[in-house]
Length: 197
Image 1 (cartoon, one colour):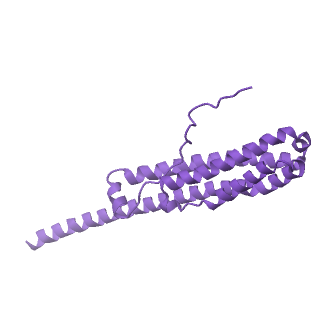
Image 2 (tube, one colour; image 1 turned 135 degrees about the horizontal axis):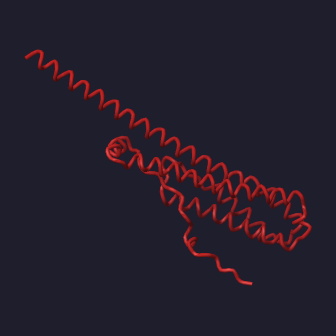
Image 3 (tube, rainbow, N blue to C red; image 1 turned 90 degrees about the vertical axis):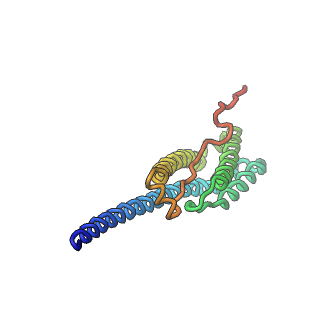
């Protein structure tokens, strides 16, 4: 009888240790995934900050050539201010917060587009080395933003799969690891813009 109890206790102990090891591994994988999402989000914010940092120099350069375009210049400065004020904590991100963040960044993109468009009327400005360099940096930053967003979505997808797959979803629920929001195309992006001459 004693020997049978010891065998059962040994089996239970081995099963408990195995289960503990699995739970520990699942939890640690979720922590790593959560940190990867947080880092990817920081990379997105870094690229948006890079763009915001380029804007004052770009506006100052344009202002020297197109002072009477003050409405456009003020719109860019206001959109930059708004975009830099919208912040998100990646660990508590909601779809609404991400939508608000994207909207603020979209307004800045639109304002920058108008700023770049007015330069067509100023050949001296277009030929200015400072302006050309700033415009090239801005274009490069836009590409970096797209890449950072794509990378963030990939990391968020990997994490979301991890926390939603059975049986790890049970562990995720126990320790409050929920799915992360991803960037989505803006409303109307599925339609090609209409070009008129």
